[in-house]
Image 1 (cartoon, rainbow, N blue to C red):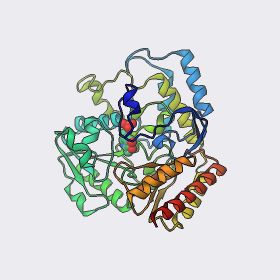
Image 2: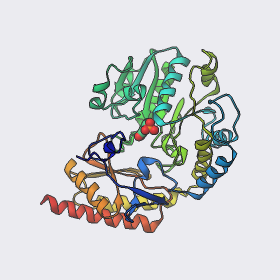
Image 3: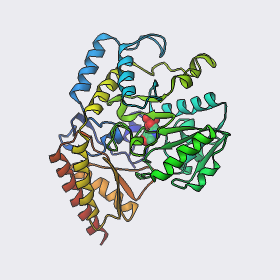
Image 4: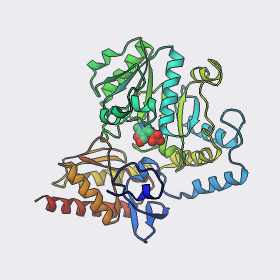
Length: 397
Ligand SMILES: Cc1ncc(COP(=O)(O)O)c(C=O)c1O
């Protein structure tokens, strides 16, 4: 048990935090106060996708700081940083996704999307999907699947039901009473579960037939993580509402939900000010997001795919590895036990590599490196991980 944060007066989220003190982070390397260097093989859980201290992002932030910070609550004053971020984001999305609402986090984007679905359809029920993770506000927690994480906070919001992942028959439960179905395009916390394309297209069809909105949560799997700018591009479908966060802010706190002008107008007049936020669309995250979106546009997806594929092959060949699930640089490695995962996370850390757990998938660990990581660093990380798996296998004998 490690209470070092509590002792410093800071709320703690587990009794076993990593307890590392950070001095500096640049590119794919985090430098600790004691001088040790760690390869960041998880991008701060899918955030630092364009590398730590990316010069374009840092420059955009410096320029914005010199202009202005907060001037007025979101939606009252025109701010150039918001215009830039919106223009770049919408230029990467299908025509029907033409309006963005910037908020402060992923969970807030999910709550905003759920509110938009209820108010624009006049319906109350929401369908979610088993294995889904959408965040920790009351709305986002309700549509998340892990029951143990929800139990202490009940009652949650009413009217939410769950579908079985990848089950085409189960889609029959969606009818005209549902405002929306919310699903991660690729499930993250479920251990990188890539959907059957047939299931996703049947889900899209069912939503069309019943006038139910399809909300895709790409807070973690969007922004280039899966090898395309947005994960839905792999599956030939488009959402009615798209939720983004994490890497969108280029390292600053930011979320967004994107939909059509006609739907989003609800918030302006039915009633007026139906969804408001003080800091959503803050100029610093918007300036940073505009830089991150430009980096996304310019990403070399083939570079990352080649390195991620080679990594997958090396990992799959190890006797201890039961399965590698991967799409782009969004990767889960499954081991025989949760103890093996725990061993590997700590052993890799002691060797200078940061990998990490999933919340709800204890026998797998996650790998999601910065999309700008160079080949030599990928190879060094792969070596450390191979040695870590060897050490784990010997410890289990
Ligand atoms: C798929 C998904 N949705 C929503 C969230 C919640 O985002 P935040 O932690 O910014 O509230 C997360 C966070 O991990 C996520 O992975």
